[in-house]
Image (cartoon, rainbow, N blue to C red; front, side):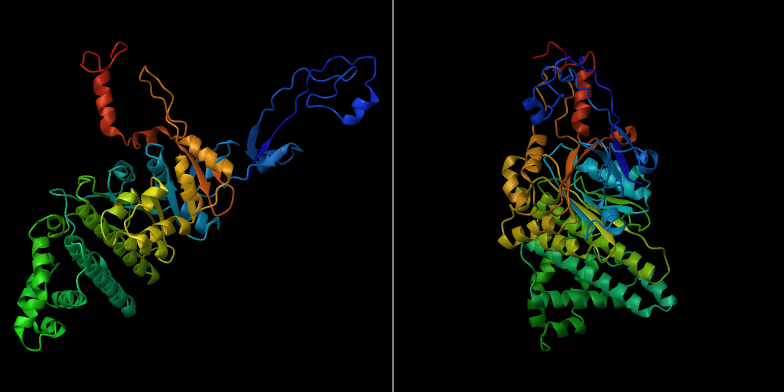
Length: 524
């Protein structure tokens, strides 16, 4: 039942009709905005505003002719009200792809200046989709903004950082258990695919760590040696190996590795080919800038039956290499778990699960190191085939186009162009040429986005004055007109959406009576 707006009429007070008739020329011109003017015209002295009511088609179907459709989508997570018609706007990439058929790709890209509610909008989608049976996955929360929301949903919070938690990149996760279950049920081909996917993800992560550590990728021969070493490790090692075990296999120089190293029976050739590789792996296992988090067994294995957030907020922003490595590990681990869930569901051993992947602070992830753009690019192209909806969050188009390599900048702009929907908050005027090159925006829509990025009004008393664009977003799908929506928070959501927790704690301290600080009406 689509909501409709209808406008009941009122009787207007008019002046008493004059006895004289209006001139024929005035009659030919027609009435003005307030009715017939002139002598005997009876123009209205007061034009009352029309009161608007809102109801469903069942409630107002008999009203005629003063009704009109609101044209706001009603399928998906309720985000807020239309800024102009006050109609409810429902939106999320999974519902608009799966149920409403409004977009062809279950993904969204959110742009907007800091402090205007981007993370709040994503949390609203997470909460709504969780109620519909979709599991949110925050694969790398760099600021810790989504931890409280996932915890409130009864989800799993996985802390990663120096001395906080560890993630073994050689851990196949649930792949071994799932492959064994598939073989027991006679699904041998599916079991082979699950094991192959787990092997490929572990190899990719080892290569990625070496690339970040060296600032250059390993050679083709080194990658071949790593691939064979992992296979030897799986055949001979009892339990879950770590990087130190992989290094021991390479150091032991078994016949399988010497064969792929092409040493021709001369072990000195093998030692020369693996010297640099052993040095890099030794740095990864001995601590260093990357090894501490990845050199031990996984402290908190990921589950596939609930919401999950990887809390990596303890990693300092200056440690860009470590951030890049952790994010890659979280993405690999998370999508490996999704692959296991899909394999079991395809075999009829589990119910089908859909996931909502959140890539927040994307600009920081892309700048963290080499290989990040390609990894995100692969994720954005495969989300529909693996049954995963995703949302990516960044500040501006300039952040995406500030990458050093031209090919990376083109790929980053493709993230916006390929997204099923683009949701824009307040943006500066300098962003409009870059944004309109990716998605069409009318002049009115551009002006609306520019007006939303203005700062709040001056208030010398220290009151909480919101910026004019806080909580306001424009939903764009292709060339269709944008839907401006204003998000309103419930009392429970307000307690989960404090992204300035440390600043607010300081403000409360300064405002306490009897404390020293710049608080009070007379403070300077």
